View 1 (tube, rainbow, N blue to C red):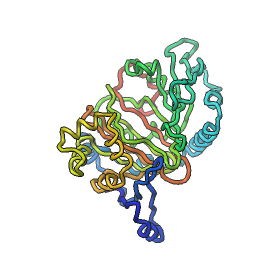
View 2: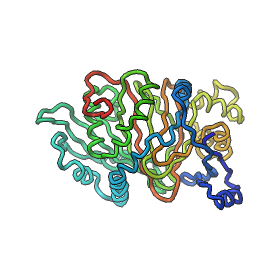
View 3: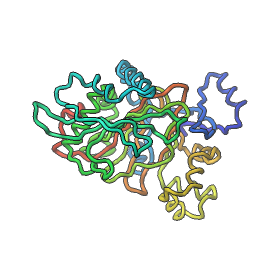
View 4: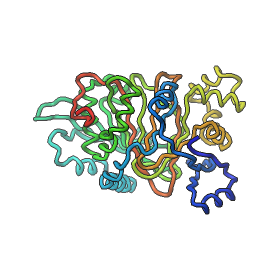
Length: 364
């Protein structure tokens, strides 16, 4: 157990713990009061332990794995936090990227759009990669969006990708294109180096994945108080998993393998058996299940009691394997604290020979 859960009615215990200097975090998201999280321990796994956990489709928590990187990149992290604050007040994303890339000779602005049919999308900015004036990858984009369809949640994210999103063209993109998307992210947001150049983290990923891979489809998260993401999974075709890295502030995570989540739904009487529970998790229209997963403090307590609650602070990472649609780490995120935080989430993919080495300092 990495964090202990306290029920919403435990205010007296919360006060007592805080008087003794313990950090106790309210677990709230968009009007749902799910109790409190108390950090219990931050044990770093051995490589064999991490590998067993990864193979089981369970989250691998790596407390402090980034070391002093958040401090070394504090200026870039602070710039990004201030940028999100300006964007939240109505600033133009294209202007922010133009300032960040104004001296870049390889990336050429190709336009910006606003999708009126997507209530969460705020602005999408396109660039083409033209090193030496030669077009090598086009329609690379960064999309600024709200995390939720709820005006009370001011959480934002920026996703980097390429091609037509509505037909998921990024899944067919070459590794050359993916590499230039990754360079777009790294040049626009230099704090990417806190993750990409972290030898300890990269060595663990090399060990767990066991084959050439890349960290792509990058997303920057600016989770605001009482915000975050509801339960979901990232089992996308060709994706090995996700590497989430906290750079500033804190987030709470409820995460566990899909099969174990289904087992707990049976144990708590929500489903009659494992097969029904697995089928329910595949039904995105099941409103009762959505409520149980995301707004039920009692079920949150069950999850925490079975080791599914983690508190991430600056320098922590958590790895979420995606072996298949049924062997995948489901997860839910809650913003902690009184200020928006900053985190980077990178998808893990097999790497092909045409992936540009310049996109990854670990390969260089």
